[in-house]
Image (cartoon, rainbow over the protein chains, first blue to last red):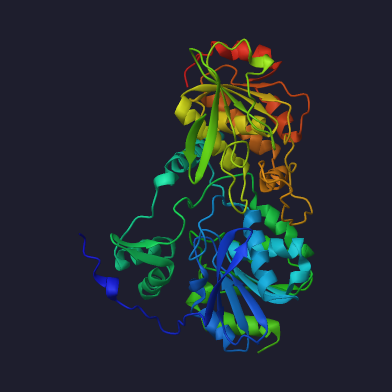
Length: 309
Length: 220
């Protein structure tokens, strides 16, 4: 058997704090794992994680917000973290799951912070059900048109065919698929390929929170049927179209350092699209996970926006 | 009935008629299920005839908590084709849209696809609209899954997206005509498909006659 050396190791990270409460909410039969930091009678603030992440990616950021007097609520999206692996996944299903958590924790408008996919989800929810939110903070989660390389139409069609064929081949295997096991360090290093700006120490911590230790090693809890990338009819500009109509105060946080997991959206891309009660802040020298790279800076930005500075 | 596995779903594939040659695969419309016998429009087909119940329909698994997309149903149909081998497809309504997607995605395995009128043809239109996020109510204990009815009737179908799949079928199937539109109702996506070179408009019977001896007529 391979040596998974760190299997008994307790991994800590400076400033990271486990949730004060953890429980499950039923979302139309799908069990959603919810985590909370802070006092139960403090006002609720919700955090929404990005694709292929999980609530514990807020283990540093959430306690800082809780320390400012909020009951911080985050949940694992279906198929992520400790939530159920569902039969099916789609955008509307994620929105319904979000609503199930909102119904459980809040009976009035609350501030919400969404990162990446979570930022896009809250923009759409604010369009569907604007009464849910008092303030929206979107951390590098505003899609813009895909960066299209200058390639011929023939090659573009070939790329599309390869992408779809690859996805269908993947679907043929998912019934028996499992995430690839590795040592704790190995899983952290693999994660660093898509999170190149995050430290190995942080990623090792994340493995112990978003992964599980099986007999053959550590593997991410993420549903193996989920696949990075993909295709479909959805257009990134559709999310942008909803922005100007947002009525609640809106803070969009963008970054200068682009990486694979981000959209690469710039303030210029959003010129004319920012809602009347909104503003965009650009963080210099930070990447897609700016709230992990510079949690204090983003915290101050958010508190100032909420009037809690 | 043959049970096929697609991820956590058991799909019911029904053999309606046995025979020799290229299988004909029938894909039902939104909210429907496989027919009990071969439709009259396909009676002249000499090969075996099969019909697939999509996820959440007929005798296939009803998933928990929704999450439907047309692309996942395309993978349902791909699961059937993986079992049957190269097949000709007739799809009704939603099944017609799925047939176009699969014809583009698996051009070597789909030996002609016919799009018929049927429920769920229009989907959610070509672009997003103001929508309410509803949770479907189960008014019946049996399929179809109300989440399927709700989500797949909102499924957005941009014309250029569907046309891309038609183009892939035309370019990579090796068939001069890989798609036939028999439907009279033409939502924007289907009109875009019908407008593509290499797509014909004719009856189901005429299309099946065309596809019955379908062999690659040009190199891929």
